[in-house]
Image (cartoon, rainbow, N blue to C red; front, top):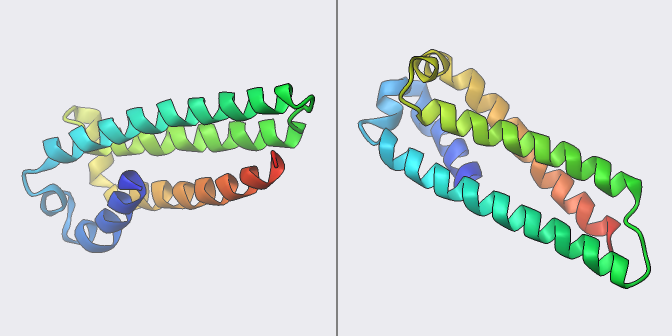
Amino acid sequence: MILVGGLFFMRTVLAPAGADACYAGRRAVWAKWAGIATAVLLATGFYNFFLIHNLAKAGGDELPSTYHMLFGIKFLLALLVMFLVAILAGKTTAAERFRGQMPRWLNIAWLASIVIIVLAAVLRTLHS
């Protein structure tokens, strides 16, 4: 929720004032928390996937192929969001170019985040 809430706040409140005003000298702090949130999301996501997969196997069931497909889409979208958060908080010349179109990239990241949340809700119903 740190990444999604942070993206929403950045897009709706801070980004309209421009990239410099968006971070106001606090880019490194956002980058640190974005990195921590990314690591936690990856760790818990893989843990949950393997737990659900192993529970289904132990019960003599197989997860439906739809589950694997939707999980793959969710995972790729999550990587996109994590990349966008990281590049927008980065300190390279590529990051500067991305920040030049910050509202566009924040819109893409926010839309991907919404799709991820919807997919998570659907995935919960597929392994029950």
